[in-house]
Length: 198
Image 1: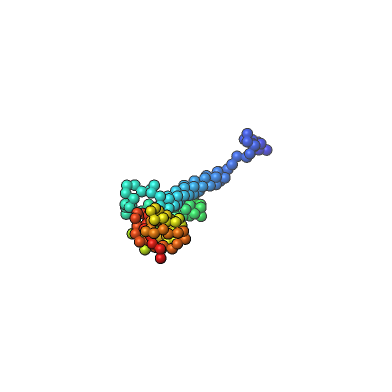
Image 2: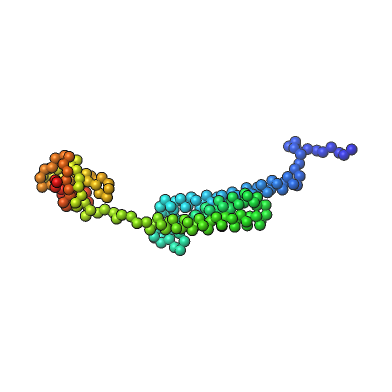
């Protein structure tokens, strides 16, 4: 009769070699995936900051971006990390060859994403916009008196400038009551104008 098996102090039977190998593989897969996910998350965070226009990521002059933009590198890193994590989980990454396969999968996902991030950020930077309105743009604008304009002082008028309502101080050669329609004949400053009724 074989001698009785002694249980360890924990009360559980000892694990065999095959069970330990499974535990090690799970830890390796989880560690590799975690590293890839951290790379992907960091890339996405930097990409979000760069696309939202924060100047935290520019060193030196803000218009100097170098041959590769921050958005391109961040998009590449984000897609690489998440792509490699997906491939790593699908392959199980039990061998160095499988980890290399996960890296290759990450690169295959990252190259088009980096290119797309580069194109989109360049398009956003070079987008045509309307010029900023100046005081010269006030002349000829139509408006409405919101505070009566006296002869020897200032009242207030509301005009539309570049589609936006703007309230300005106004002078006139004759008194103008509230609610009267006016047009700007001269811009006295950035915030005050000379008006006449029409």
